[in-house]
View 1 (cartoon, rainbow, N blue to C red):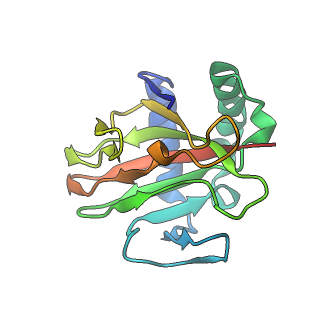
View 2: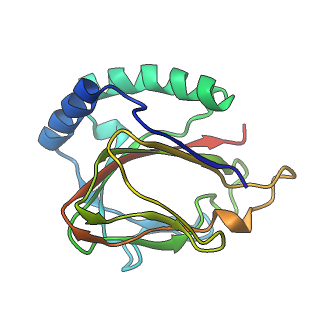
Length: 181
């Protein structure tokens, strides 16, 4: 399975500007989960807050348009296949327990996950792949990418991952997904 990360993926000044803009955004809501593509609902497996791309400030949206092109080039995917950004905020003890990103019954599954850390916690908050026994620490400006599907389009069991609890501090990430088509 393909899991990779790039440090210093964005400029520090851009990270700070995005954090400031997201900090003033309204529209943050309790994060939800989806089960078999049957709608989303709040669940104790996911305790973070989410801000959807549609509620992000215009300056952030403008920045993300350029970021989409760069990430698409970096991973060899068409940026038009990106689903849409979400900002995810994890406070103390918040987490997203082990899950898989593709919507199991969707016709157009999430082929690849892209996660950019904007604010790292003091302790905790790793992205953990239990089947690989591999943890990636959330480092500011780190871009983490992994494949969710096998070459034949079936779910890759090794893409099972969790956002471990933040033990001290606060974690803020941007996440997006490349769709199959």
